[in-house]
Image 1 (cartoon, rainbow, N blue to C red):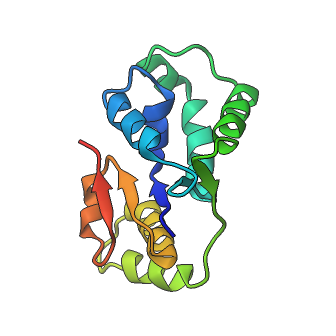
Image 2 (image 1 turned 135 degrees about the vertical axis):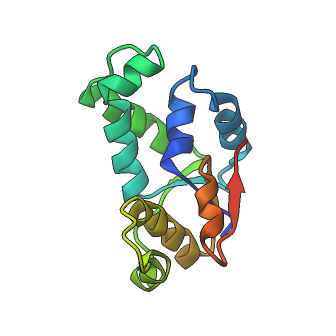
Length: 146
């Protein structure tokens, strides 16, 4: 599969034109195609919806009020595009997730990153992100947008 999992920070940067990485996210999105789509999973979908409806984030990027209804409409618009693909959880996800997440120290911020890394690893697809911490996941193909 030639798909690419987009981290929620890429979807968020794409959603707000005033985001400092908007141009990078837009370029990555525009390079996606129906043959090599940008992937949403349930975790990135849920995080996208939560973050775009967060008033603090809206204010930070000078956005109009984004209601839950408007956010859902934007999600549906994105999901309907030919270069976007929604994928459910792959077989083997939990094994990869445990491998990436089981650390010998408390690290609450690792859980979601480890989940997304495991999702990409189980599908054998790269992840595109703004987060350099994804480089810490061994065997994961990562594209950092800078």
